Length: 79
Image 1 (cartoon, rainbow, N blue to C red):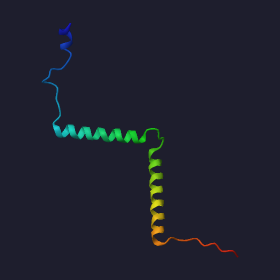
Image 2: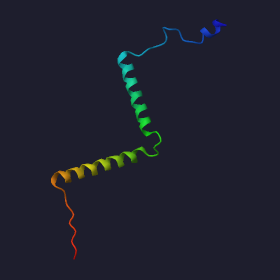
Image 3: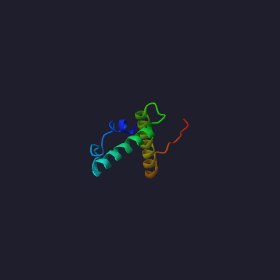
Image 4: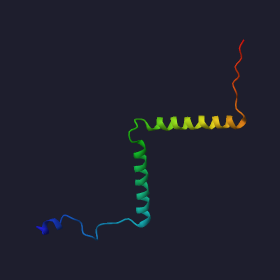
């Protein structure tokens, strides 16, 4: 029975393994794909979430700048 299955598999000399640099690059690319998939898991529109996060960071940055400068204090006046 082993005779029949051995003819279906390629021999060890036919199996090509990539060099170390190519293998490292492929592993890095695979890790980046997994990280992107994990970040987008459960999110319908990842680009929208990214825009909202950037907008929130920008608003926070502006608020910090205003606090540092003394702020634009609102003054209430009763006419």
